[in-house]
Length: 155
Image 1 (spheres, one colour):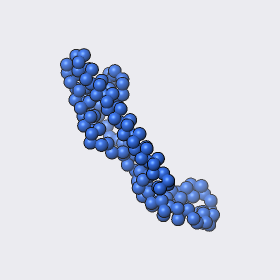
Image 2 (cartoon, rainbow, N blue to C red):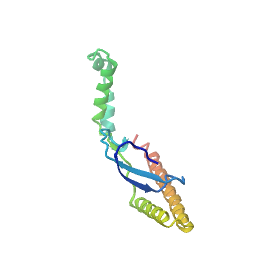
Image 3 (cartoon, rainbow, N blue to C red):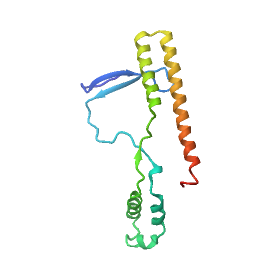
Image 4 (tube, helix red, strand yellow):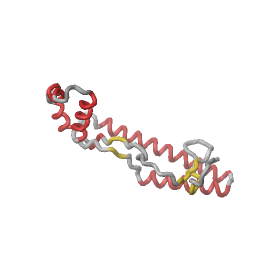
């Protein structure tokens, strides 16, 4: 149920449930303006220039910060701007094409279930949903294992 005093809602679409929930998600389009960025992205630490960062750390920080008169905000901003130069960029973990195809199939099966409302369609959707969840989990584990195997050669 969506309650509003104005005509701010432009479209409502029913989507597949999130996770193993039986409740459908609703995508509600509104005509509100939002100035905030959508979602914070994670840092891609594999792209950092760590040799240059290590060389930055070999310095006399007391002298650098003495010129700032030890104002904690100014010290933090100085340190942050120096570290930001080392290409630790933000990113969203890209999904493999196989995973994207499986997610598309899951969405199609959800639409089929909503259209037909029969047990077979629900069973197909639930099976696909569980398959996507397993594939996503395995992909994340694979990525984490790759990082742990590289930790000695790329600290």
